[in-house]
Amino acid sequence: MQKNKRPISTVSTARSESSSEHEDGLAHRLAMLAADLAAREDRVANREELDTAEAECVRVIRKCLHQKKDDVLHEALDYALDEDVDAYRLLKERIEDAAENVVFRREDGPELEVNAFVVPLFARTLGGLRADQCFQDEEAFDLLRESFLQAQLESPDAKLVLVSHAYHPDELGRIGYSQVQAMVREAYEAMTRKKAPAAPAIGQSMSGWPESHFGPEDVAVELRYLLGFTLKRMDDRFYQVPKNEAAADAYFEKRAARFRQWATDIVPVVKRCLVTDGREIDLDFLYQDLFHGGKERGIAEYETLQWMADLHHELEAHGTDPESVCAVVGPADVEGETVLRVNLHAATGGALISSSDRPLALAGDLASEMDDACDALMSMGLKSLDVAKRFDAEGNPVDVRARHGQQGNR
Image (cartoon, rainbow, N blue to C red; front, side, top):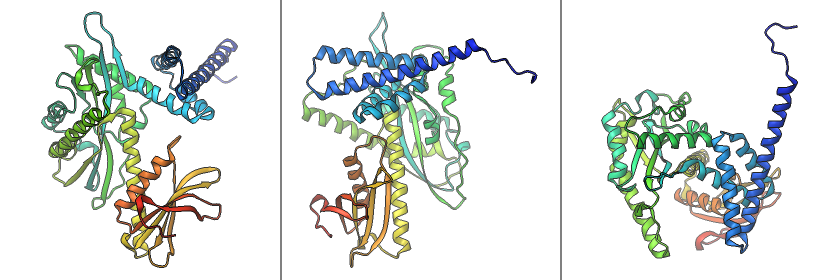
């Protein structure tokens, strides 16, 4: 018998199996709740029944978050995806919402809500960003934090906590649903207590950047995120969207305009937060969004930029300018998986220059992803762009049409 080896307990094993079966059953139940709720939303349903189904789905999600059962939530998402893509999207939305938005009800005051938000940013430098230089300027960090309220990105009556850290995408990717909610609760405590309590979940979220492989003369374009939390009253009129469609459009446009102005004005401050050695740094910001949506938008934009860079390299390798190229975009089937295919052809003669496939986002919307790809291609200055209904097994585009009224080429 090996020393120091604990004997296997048949009782604990039985309990472990029982727990595993319970969690599997909980995941399956949550997926079925989401499928039922998605089906009810697709048809005219009794409002009371719909509210009851919604409440039960959210209750189970919150219970899993409270018990830190992220594995159950991910397994439920897998079950939902197997069942119905609409159920998957609905469940994912409800889980993310429950994690990044928490309502606090108090007997002696109004209901309060705390949201976790991110601002994705792209930094272009020589040699890449360095973790030991980030957020060393305390004055600049204070100016950055205060700017969110001064620029009216948040209500003047709101409170805001900003983490003094530039998050790498890998760091955000390691933050699970239950940790996001724990961070929100820690931020609430920090904004409502006179003495700031410990915040272990927020501290653990700053898990460190991966090793940089940029040389001193390499041009680096990197994605980072600002992460913060907003405390606001549930009845704050600043956040109430008008019911009238035209008024709602105007409301969102004003908020977007304020963000665009902030993104211009704040550049010198953020530069001070990211570099300390006087290097030049160019910054571009994506719109402030809730934690999960902003995280995904940043990654999607970064992948698009990488894809466009690869296409530019392909054209350079062939000695071709974008203005001399036509593109055909459409879905294709590769080993049972749908991908988005882009074929680049010479405008004169139609010779194929390159063909590339992009995987679709999990449960992504094909039409939306095609539109995004087409917008990115047109920003490169291509001569023309066509859209195919699909590519057949031989790789030929089928039912090709010009996009946005352009003249088709094939």
